[in-house]
Amino acid sequence: MFRLEEKDKEFLFSDESQKIRIRPLAHDIFRITVTKKEQFSDTESRIVICREEIQKTEKKETDDSK
Image (cartoon, rainbow, N blue to C red; front, top):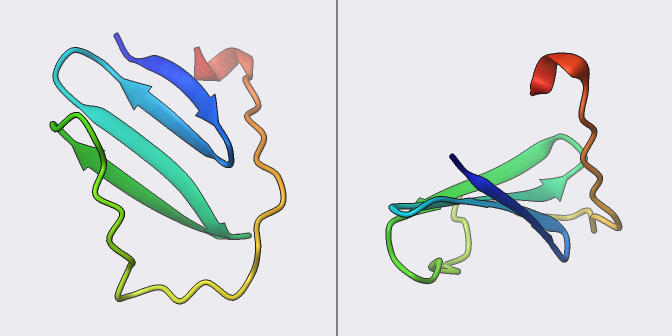
């Protein structure tokens, strides 16, 4: 079972073996990173150039998301 943590402008999911980070880069672009290490590598993306500053992230739970 994954644990969810909201940190700054990103969402972190983790269990005993891996971590998943979901970070919004723009209104409709998200960077998803998976690692089995203790820390994420913060190497800049060579694909996406972020020109929009995300001000706030928000999670929304619905009945079908549980």
